[in-house]
Length: 346
Ligand code: F1P
Image (tube, rainbow, N blue to C red; front, top):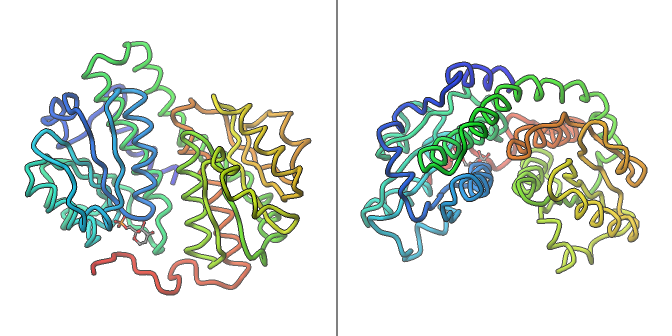
């Protein structure tokens, strides 16, 4: 993962190059609304992009499941910009959503991994993620690659709009270039994650909670666990817990918290207290050096400090590893999980 990110970031050293997107940058910068269509893991990358485009470029973003969008009668037209995200570039639902939006006059950008794929060809412009082949069915490095490219797009569009100062722009680029090394550092915790996986190998349910940019990461952590270990897992925004899922918490419920040091930190600490008060077993993903959360929870996994806007790129890694080890310990075929296809072409 780190290597595929490093390659892409070196290619953009000091300046963001987004290939075929360069000529369409004004269209993106002037958009009143961006509609993101995708499925599965790619949809989660879209949710991260929603936070980034809104935060950095102040553009209204809607993130749609392509599998729903294609069957609706969505309000979309010539002034809309659609970003379609797909690892395989062959997902039938995403392709159908693109065709529908195109027939209404929208401009379509693609973020695809597979060069020359059907989705890449159906778009007006786009950026390839160049994450290399995904060996397994479940997307992992494709997710980090998609988020990297979408982050670069959001930064570039914000700059084009004049919404970013030159200092912030430079700072974000410098921070982006530190990410591959920081991702590599998370792997130093692999043995610890393996121990936690061993303890929870036969759990029947899991809940994942996060706020802000870590909310899509919670969804992605739950999806990875479902996909490769077949354990029932739910991801929620931590603030939604009190609106229902809190009823599920007891001493048999493992709860994974995305609790890195960011603007939501104090609120996530309160959510952890709420779960501990109900005897939930908490695994917290925390920022290295945090001394507050370790005393409150059952297990911690540390990730390096990163710029707040880049958090998902590192906080997702321990969740991918946790799913991987649990699946292996349960004897699952992690590369070819049952009932899943790499490209869902129907
Ligand atoms: C979308 C997706 C993947 C998932 C699985 C089924 O694929 O939902 O996220 O891991 O492979 O398809 P894509 O459009 O990103 O290729």
